[in-house]
Image (cartoon, rainbow, N blue to C red):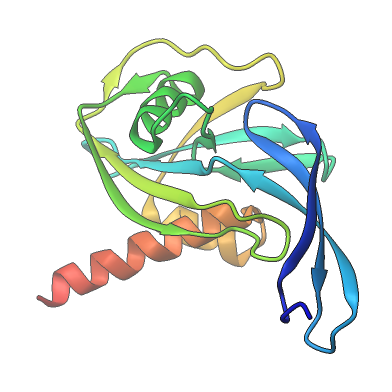
Length: 182
């Protein structure tokens, strides 16, 4: 007899460079067999770029699934051949036109625990150097330079509605306030 949450079968429905769309059959706690569809991910990165004048670089882009503009920190999926730090460096340059040799891991989280096993690695990038921007063909990005106070106001007013950006900003503020207390 199968145990609760045991996988009975697993199939990959679709594959792309960032994740596999999968279907599992598994055992519910009551013993019934159920279907589970999810994105099996290599992970993602989010970068909080900070300029010398304490302004943050954010990006503004159209999000197809929501059919509206999103203000967010740069980031993206990790390709199969990338490490999280190499993905962070690539996304920073691609989406903002900046590069940095001072990128530090802030923390990790799962952006949508019921739909994906994705782990998002959040980085802080300082000592930024202007480079060149080369967006993916699916992106049209505008750069915004904003203060910490402006970010907070945009979250409260729902101008920033991207969950990964809000989670990354919460992590950043938590670690900043704990650093200041020590």
